Image 1: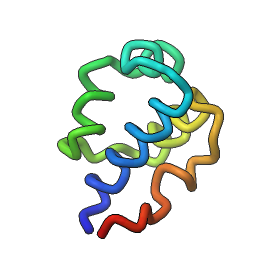
Image 2: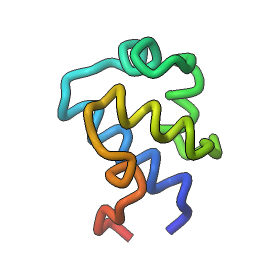
Image 3: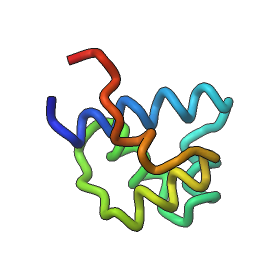
Image 4: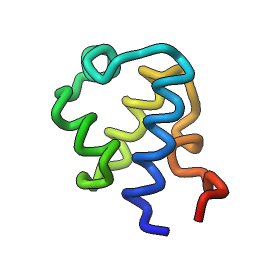
Length: 72
C-alpha cells in the first residue's frame, strides 16, 4: 500500500475516533484544513515534522499515523 494512502486512512480513523473535525485538527496542529483534507485523501506527502504535529493534535504517537491498518 502507498504510504500516503495509509497515513490518510489512519488520520481519518483517529480523527473520527476523537470526534474532531478537519478544521479542529488543522487548528490544533497549525496546518490548514485543506492540507488535512489532502492528507486524508492521500494526495499530500507530509514531512516528519508535520506528522508529529498532527499526532500531537490528535493525542497519539506519530507512529500511529504510519502503522499498518490491516486493509491492504
